[in-house]
Length: 469
Image 1: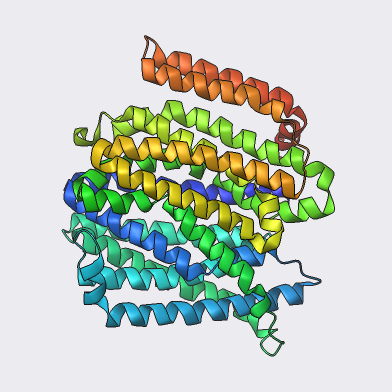
Image 2: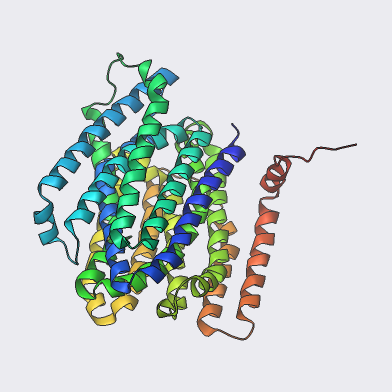
């Protein structure tokens, strides 16, 4: 399957999943109180940090490995799957045995039932990440798309039904656990023929992979500190209601990142091979993917505030400038993601851990001092400052480890466009949306000119209409 079709399948999956998530926002915010919605989002925050721990860095290890043949790839996938099953099952047992103790150390109000349902969801979702990664690695975007979309549709449908029948937060947690377990069984059933062919093959996953897995795990946890840890501080110091207001703004900003996800899922699974096999093309392709991300950020700076005010109850309105600032945080993360490849390539990824650990210390310190004084404004300023510094450090260190030629000048107009849109959003002149939309159109025209060859190839690969006589 060609790269364009792969991106298209990933695009469909992401569009459906994030569209369903967006559909849940106006429903959940209207049915649940702000405290209940904040409590639900705190459970999501717990899920995020636990899923990082349970993944063990195995999906990243799958992408990083080079295999001589398909059999070696399947054996390595089998080993990762077995390890994931063992670790996740142990986690569920511990969560059930020590539920009350875990509740006592968590901020906010978390019920034992919700915590146990969350542990089941985490077990299934974390194991599912391994088959999903295998599908991406083997260019099987179609299977990934079908499973992910089915999962999303079932979970959303069940969640909405349980919300309307009065089950509240418990209903949402139950739907997540039930559908994750169901899709896990389906995915494992589909992979039985593949795994059966290597059931007696020698194990390939061993202790020499431990340093890379540890570095990815530590790096992921440190990355979470810059992308989720603020929720814990807000709950502890401001309460669930404040978290609800911040969380919806953050979700609309994260829609920007999700729009880039189809390109990310295709490119990030291939970029190590591109650098190894055709290094002269890597810089060009990396900047192409980054400019796509910046264009999407510019579009979302215009669209997200409008959708925010349309979709949510009036109690959540009045935070448009938060959206613009949080989208700029996404912009900085895009730069870090694109320019960090040498940090993963050398030293078993330990440089990523160093940089993310430093960023984590800075952001946690900033949250600790700024949230009690400036509340949510302190969160947003802290995120912007640390993410900007983090992106600069990744560029510098990665280039020192392995110099890659980038034509940085192609980023000038996208950056000028983003700054212009941000200033307009802050000043709020007459015809604000018209002016912002004009800037986006000019940016699109510029990128279409710069990447004319890719645009023409994409248009040619579109399905052609049949001629009827």
